[in-house]
Length: 605
Image: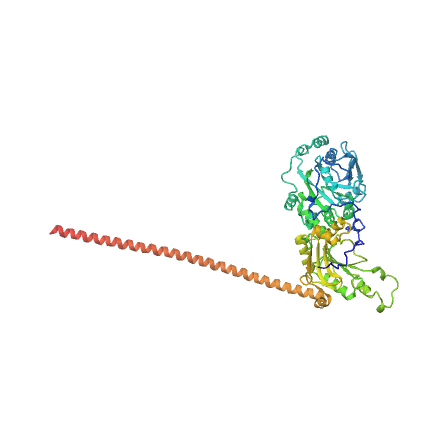
């Protein structure tokens, strides 16, 4: 097939709107990814298959990257002392390791214990800014390391814990490394900080505590095992394992994702894991990065309460959680699909047809981005009907107050944080279920790009593109000079060509008149029809239930009749046998009397 004539295959410039206020959910700004320096070959990882990297064994390599361990803490000085004592015995070079403890409003304030890494400091969280996310933001803002290692204040790490994390970050600059936790109930007298430091230094951290058989992250282990060590995990699953107790990532990657969402008080690690996925990050669960978790987590102690609290916030920010987005008529902070339509040089009617078709999708969480020279509309306006920018003005007037439509001068590098983007040429209209089916197709094999061939001429193939945000981000991160973006996406995540008719993308002249009616009235009509069908189905179910009950009763009667028949047959057989026995007895009695009479006659003669 000819080269695709997709309109956005050139480098992108621009950014999606970013939140500024700390109490407003953060939508990160994504600048174009830097092109690798000449001669620098960035590690290329297909999907989440980090196994293509040859990670060295601890102690067999030379570290060069600095790491900042950021620990948000509130109270529990005794446990923090054990955490710092274990970090003081790490194999990672001390001159490359700093520890930042963020005191999140402890009373009395936290103090620096005697046993701690050389470069350890305690900083206070900003007044009125309590919470894990804000404490982490405070800590990362003052961190000097090229890698941020987030750690809870109740973690006792094994001797090679930090080194196990850091060996991966020396191989690629877009990895998120997850440690492995063992939980202890802290039964009995806990060890002292000196005892912890000695045990960790002697590689005997496993003997410090008894493992809690009742609690653990078994569900993470099951996810990892089910996907070949998480190497085969699909994109929509990656954020699930981003549990914040011990996680490390490049500081630049954290900034690129937009940092922590400080509007969240719980679930901030899950939400950050989702946004990291959209940057093209690879998630590496390392079984050798071991540590003890002292006690249980809030999610373990109050799981139902935590889910009840988190679900509304996660539903608004993580489109992958489809089961949380079932409410009709809702709009969400982060869309599932961003539909991009270029209005430059297109007619009002063609663009409107494409936009309205996308907004009429059966997917409830679709947004539309209209690109074009909107800045040119500023200034003095000529005669309305002879305005050379009339089509743009009409589009602005049509959608300026529709919350699902935004305007951009040029499309950004990706549509992050939305996980999918459909680039639809103006004048082509997706059917009601086109977006849902395309996303379902992409999710089936975790493909990075679907190209829908719309038309073809001497200049090439005009195509609509469904792009997976994480795949495009990864490809832009590792693309080499002279390569085509689509080729890199296909190499790392897969790409497939589809035909327009099968996926119901049609020209406006064919598609628009068939559904350009009052959609509210049409929706009410179909909703009423659906409710009527539901009532009919309910009546049918009641009838079926009644018939089943009647059938059950008839079967019971038939069974009873069968039992009665058997019983009467048995009684009849018994009476027959009794009659036979009686006749035989009578015959024997008659013969006996005849024999006696014959004997008397014989004796008399």
